[in-house]
Amino acid sequence: MKAHHSELIPDDFAPDSRVWIYQSPRLFFLSEALEIEKMLEAFVADWKSHGTPVKGYANLFYGQFLVLMADETATGVSGCSTDSSVRLIKDIEQRFGVPLFDRLMLAFRVKDKVEMVPLAQLPYALENGFITPDTLYFNNTVQTKVELETKWLIPLKNSWLASRHLKPAETGN
Image (cartoon, rainbow, N blue to C red):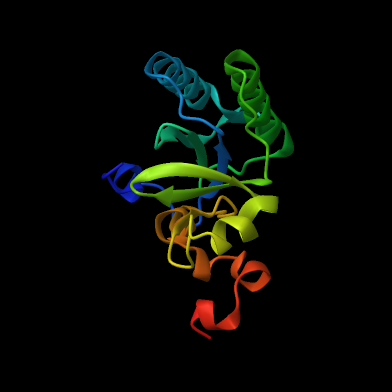
């Protein structure tokens, strides 16, 4: 997990390109990852909005995050093209038996590994030192390429979770 994810993001996409992130609760096996990458490549190659090709990008990051990106400077992404991406994610969910739409499962980088913590267990994880305000959090709410590069992997204390789960002293305020 040493590689920085921003090195894998294409340079030729506009900073405001739209981004969608779906996380798996587990690391995909190598055979699954290879199959998923083929599915993502095929989807992006045929991604269209009202018949016009979408400049898209898709990749599997850290073995368990599916990232889709659309550069809307050439072609806007419509409801139908977004629906087609959701169908792809649902196909992957079904094929590999993993939930990819669970927003109540949080991902953190702990000891150079992705660790999952249910939102309801976050206070317990903090109280017992499993994670700290400085633990890196995968902020899957990012919406653009520039946010993916700069705000996806951030300290917990800088995330939307801080105001709900940390004391002011822990956030540096």
